[in-house]
Each structure stands twice: as C-alpha cells, then as structure tokens.
Image (cartoon, rainbow, N blue to C red):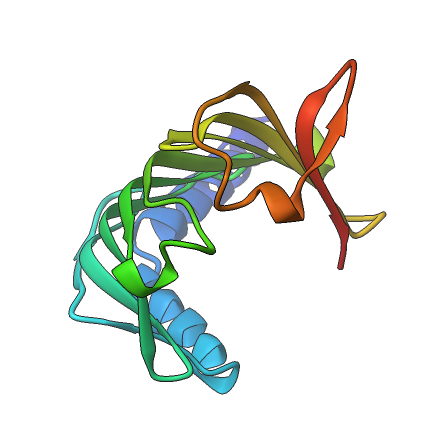
Length: 172
C-alpha cells in the first residue's frame, strides 16, 4: 500500500513541477507566431514569467501594419482546471475612434473544466459593462451590454431586444 501511495504522490508531484516549470514564455512566442501568420503583430511588450502564468505589460497591437491599440497589462493564469485571461487598460488608436470604443478598462475571459464548452467574458469600459460567452461547440459569440453608456461607435454591430437590451451575436 505504501508503494502505491508513493507512486501516486510522485506522479502528482511531477505534474505540479511540470506545470510550475513549463516554458510559458515559449508558449507565448508560439501564440505570437501564429498571430503573425494572420497579420496581427504584438510589439514593445515586456514579458514576465510567474509561477502560474504570464504577465505582459505595455503591448502594442498592430493589424496589417496599422496600430490598433495599446494594452497596459495582460495576465494569463494557467491552472489545471481553471484558466483566466485578464486585460487591463486597452486604449484604442485615435484612427479607430468612429469604429471602436475609445477605452476598455478591464476585460476578462475564463475557461473552466467544469463547463468546457463555454468561455465566459466580462468587462467594462467607455461603452459601459459587458457580459458574454463564447460557445465553442456552437461556434457562437454572445455579448450583452446590461449597463450601456457610449455605444454610438459600436451600435452598428449591435442588436436591441426588449428583454436583453443591447447585445452582439456572431457565429464564427
């Protein structure tokens, strides 16, 4: 019985050590490489490897060579059963002022093994508050704006419902 306990304990210890010492920065560079193939570039960022994820600061986002936004802080947290992405202070470029919100104060995406087919979204910014979800099986994005402020820049992408209020819905 003691041998079985040691084998199981050693296995879980090995999993934890692999998780802590995994090459998270290299995974980020792999993500950056795949985004580059889609003509999306992240530059001027500083990357910090933490015990449980990555912290990226001062990143500029370029699409097709044009600057789209600046992100102050981005946190990836990788846990075995619960993964989060939190983005703080996204400032859109002034050239996009008629197509996108000026500022997004916070945006978070949460993926849990308890509900593996849904990614939950929530955020706040100059547009108000958003709650949403990405249904992976149905390949559908739904974003609700329960407290809407300045929606005039993105209103052309939204629909209005008496019960839900303003919402965005898209199949990908």
